[in-house]
Length: 404
Image (cartoon, rainbow, N blue to C red):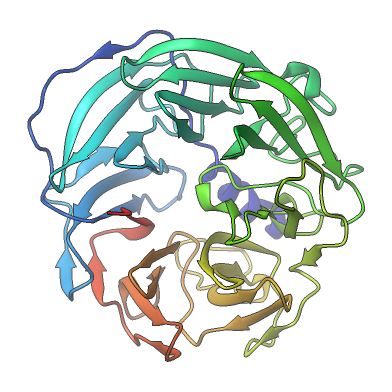
């Protein structure tokens, strides 16, 4: 079935492996890339889309330029670097090209390698969040949260989540967030492959006390029909707004079986807010005649506005060509009004899907038919760039601006 084929490709791009057995500090302080305030990654897939090359590098600003990979650092294919403050974690990736986790720090505007960790196979670690010296690493491959001292690169503990699996012994922990000393972990509950059980269109969030690393409870939202809470390679798919309300973006099996949309946990609460259920695939998109099945990437801007790259099934060919087909549309999502609006950018393929924020601009990484790279949108004026402001060698896969 063509929908299932493209969803499988998308899911493979969502599973990124990191975990570790032991770690050794690397004291090499040699700067590895040029000065910059923004971390970007680009992907160069082979024709089949399942293999290729990925790179990351810093850039200083959004001034027009042609960005090459001449000074970029290679990553495992489909790997997305995770930014925690001024630290960057380069992950092994779903392709199994390496079993090494590398940590960099941004020092004086440059990336400096801090250490490497040899990792076990099939951990599929996807996300990192930090509290003090502790780094929490989610591992959907083995159903564990690893707690690492990211200063000494030594293991503190492993948190076994096997008893929270639905249908098997692995709940597949995904993206995470810390609020009020509690770690909120999206559990995507894959069973026998890349999808949760068809009969279970639920969203599970595990809550862990970071003071003692003990599991508090798992909460479940079962009335919205939304499954797959958080995207494994998108740390922005769980976030807090100005009111400290947590929003969780669910992919709904990449549109194959269940609803995609947004759920909420209000400030100070540890249960889902059942009064808030925003379903994407049943919401009309202003300026776009076709519905979406899920959002590839999201980023919260403020004042209830979230920006995303929406997957539009109507634009895929038969059979699907996830490199040549342009089926991804940048959108503005109003979380309060529960509306979706297309922004008028040219459509992208399924590899140019990133969403970032730099100063007062929203930055979309798009691979359109005429231009490949980072485009800009100004929410204050509603203006869009008609072509890439910064062109890239390879598809623009991720974009993160450092906070300082």
